Image (cartoon, rainbow, N blue to C red; front, top):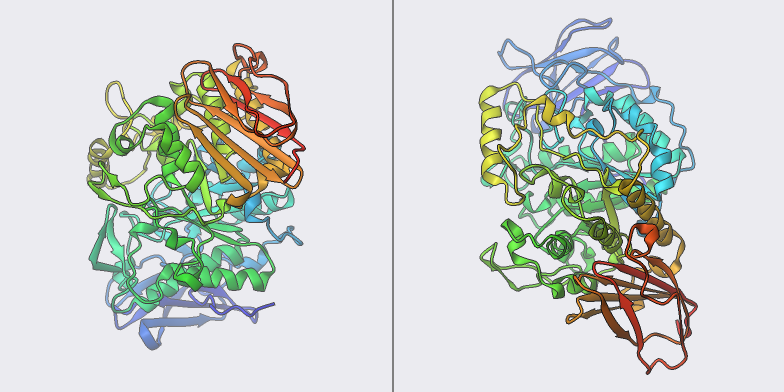
Length: 625
């Protein structure tokens, strides 16, 4: 096993020999005083100044559960620790010492799952269950397993203001949200996932800090005026004092991986991380994760969110890449959604052509240097040489639903045949599929943007911003108030309800799709040389043939509004229909496509009829793998 190269020595560390060591980066002040507010060692403790603006103090009688603050210079009020492991009473209240050795993990032997096997279910802890806690989510892990999910993705859980927030306003990046159950609750959820064979992805935000309760700038030079983000000051990754900022964030990534056994991190909006150094922060992160992967003998990954269509993120360092394992592919979503809905407002104005869906299947990125009307410039690069497992695709996610004017889901305004087609286009694609909680049964409740700030001026600014920024969706009446508790409560799922009618059909269809994805070898190949993507523009039918040894699978996706007859050159062998969304079983009009097709001469075209907005899947033991 390799030796860890990045040691965690920030915040409150309970020592094996007894006592607790406190260490904080505060180069803006000359003195820091530790204020212990509970436990056996209540009192004030001057901290020793170290190099590069660090301060530390070891207190022999301090331990797990003790509350503390840092007093900067001559200020009277203490501040919570920027590297707090727990904020039991909220974002601006005292931090709490946490001894991670007290949690008894039961996931011994867990080594993760290969990237190619990820079938992701994204959830928001606060709205996934009625209780909105880590522990409550455990009750539905069997439900996810039965669905066919292999990885659970948690939206950000870092301590935020109040009790309801998407998580991207986090200030304490090391402290799991108190209202969700804190660090122990989070560990119980991860432990339970691993014991059931589920990987866990954590969404982390390394491009900004939330606006409320953010005192980091009083401690150190975390921010820079060289750049700006849509959410405020940019993180200082390449200016004076940036070495220590880099340490903070790399340490945070390894903290989640090591102390919480997280299997993968999803890096939010990396195009808003600015670092012009020869070895930027994303390269540091990928390098350190690779070291941890070897040291822990566990499959650990990094996913990036980025809409610039730059394969440099996921290319290996040997050819100038940053070494991230996989990235979200918004182009796939936009191409799919516009074909299904006809919506062309906001950033959707660049999409809506059938050929773009074909290109998304062929290359992942639709824009590879073409002019974008929305961006008013050319953008994008090629990624056709990258493995398909390096892209995550979806028909819905927290952004693509929650940032709509009314937070409306596809299921609130699209007929069942289009919902089934959308599901199949994602799950049967060669990419890593991601589902957003509730979509698997056609949840009709919205998923709004919501906050629980205490600063009234900030609340009003968020309200104003949300009215101005929404680029998609139609909302009758006023846009829901993100600060109103009923808006938040409207987003909660109830997975205890037995699905009936269309919802039961949709749920069964998702289970069928994931079962096919998880069992058919041809649907698991990731090399583009083992697949053939073809678009029939006149009929608006997309076909993809994938081959794994003797197992071949043909998927046909119709985006036409009428029944089409298509001609295909299939490999010799017997082809059996294993899925037809137009079947009456799926509430379809009937099945015009043949149940079996026998091909002797590949030069002779095979004719197949396909209903509007339908998906057909054929499997064969075709000759010539």
